[in-house]
Length: 180
Image (cartoon, rainbow, N blue to C red; front, side, top):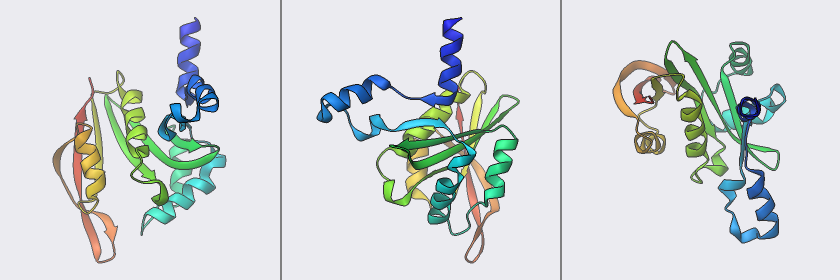
C-alpha cells in the first residue's frame, strides 16, 4: 500500500529532498543539476513554457497545442530550479509506443544537462509501458542529435518536409529506442 502511494507521488514530482537538505548544509556537496526538480506541468506553467518555446523556435507551438496536450492526458513535465521553469518535455504513449512530442530547454540554460535529465525522465516513464520510444529532430539540430544518439536512439528514417522552415519545409530525422 505504501509503495503504491509513493509511486503515485513520483508520477507528479521527481525530486530528492535529501539533496536539497545537504546542499543547504554543505553548498559545494551537490551540483546544480542535482537540485533541479522535475514535476508534472501545470496550466499555470504555460506563460514560462511559452516564453521558452518562443525563444527557442522560429515556428513555435501555440498555447492551444500545449492545452491540447493536457486535454489528451499526455505526460507533460517541466524542469525547474527555485520555481523557475528551465525546460519542458511532452510524451504521448499508446499501444506499446512512446513518442517524444517536444523537449526544450531555455536557450540560456542549454548545455548544462537539463535536456538529458528530462529525456531520462521520459524514458523511465515509458519503461514497462512501451516497447519503443520515437522522436523527430531537425537535421540542423546537431546538439540534440548527439544527445539522442548518446542516449541510445537510432535513426530509422526521414520524414520529408516535416518541419516549417524559413525556406519552405525541412525534413525530420526519425529516431527510435527500444525500452523493454
